[in-house]
Length: 299
Image 1: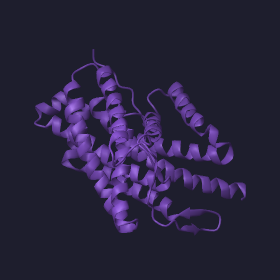
Image 2 (image 1 turned 180 degrees about the vertical axis):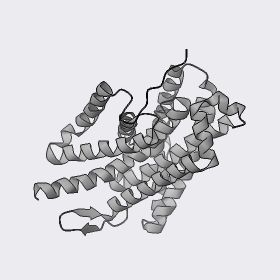
Image 3 (image 1 turned 90 degrees about the vertical axis):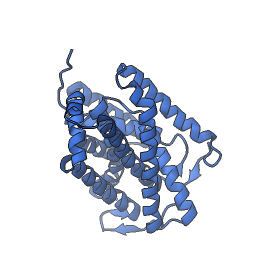
């Protein structure tokens, strides 16, 4: 394959992977933007979504209609789970030091991972994910599979839907108000608890979609599968500017493209190192991330 064709092919692969990272990163950045919490359990929400989709696809077979059903079921399961986690794990610690919430988030992550390992119908063993038949569309200089096309298009649709919710709906305005000043928003009659719970649910819906798409693109699942995608999505969120929704999208695509380019032109062994090196460089040059803003802490 010529270098130019290989470059374009890896670019397509990177956009596909970056779309998944962007979906997951949006959950991190929305939660941080409102309650200043790094929800390290977010990657494990992805795992729960992947398993929820797995059981639907195993029960009804893998085809476009059941794929949509699996996606919706995974979103509902993860949204409910996120609301429960927020209510019983994070809400009681909202006024506590941030370190307490951070440690709790790590604990929730470990509970989800190890809980999945001991549940009889999940278990610790890896499982092959049922996927639709792969069809490669050859465009001459590049080849794109139907799975990649679904990942790219569906991710774009979900991100556009999120942008609409945040900028053009009453709930979105409430989210922005709570993000700007939680106490002032409550004085204006906004239900802070409901808004924060909705934000957790919305972020987990995107993580569930990311989980089903990730498992479809890399068809093997296990209880710890969310660790690395979750960590890389966190890197993407910080890279773009934690708290910035456009930044999370941009960071996801940058990370996905850099990872696939590294695998295509250097070695797959360097992919993770390059990804985290980019983060370090950005933090040294612009600590707030690409699209982040400097915020003064009130003392």
